Amino acid sequence: MAISTQIRQTVLVDTFTDGTLGPDVELLGPVADGGQPILGELYDVPMGPLNALLATEPTELELSIIELEGGELSFAMVLREAEHALGIHKDITSYGGWHAYRAAALSEAPDKRRPPL
Image 1 (cartoon, one colour):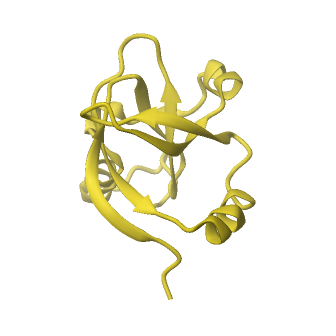
Image 2 (cartoon, rainbow, N blue to C red; image 1 turned 90 degrees about the vertical axis):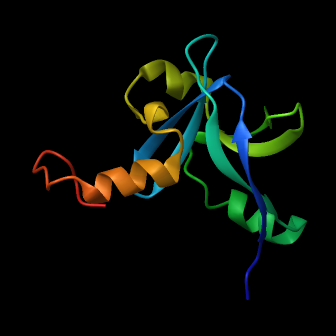
């Protein structure tokens, strides 16, 4: 049984960069300048499953509010500002979204410097 339902794909406004904590975890990081719109998904998650999910999120992330295209606000997990300041996470903003990044990464020739997805 699914704990959440995808409502729709949407575009996040340009106040975030898109990045990755590793091969399986997308992240959003706040930026003052230089962000670009990012394609993402909006989900309806009931409070019980949300509470359980939050307990398993990586410590580098925190629950925050983001702005979607059209001015709508939504909760999202974002990279903590102190973690973002370290500058150690791969920026994948230029791909336009997590799915585009994953598709590109899977279509590239194997790179021994990059861990497998």
